[in-house]
Length: 139
Image (tube, rainbow, N blue to C red; front, side, top):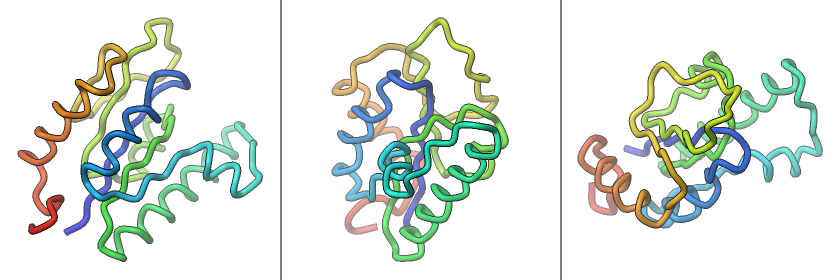
């Protein structure tokens, strides 16, 4: 069964770098927030704009899941309800920027505390494989 993984955090926290390493490990569709906004030509970061972007990311992720594809969503998700709306199976919090105004997530599965995507990608991969079933090529 396909799973949805969210990598969330502030801009420049290392989300995309980590996502690019994890996506091939799980043969996952990679949804990058900036690329999705670019495709939609929508750079509205108001509360309404963020809500629209969350719905867009959720729709694209759900379409991939329906096609039995794992998804990695590389997405700020700076407000708790947007994280809930995305409904990820596994949440990675990029807590690498200490002067953060990000509402810290109440629930997450893995907290990245410094920028070392190579190391964290292997740690996270193993934890995800241990915690979630259905991500491997033969599951």
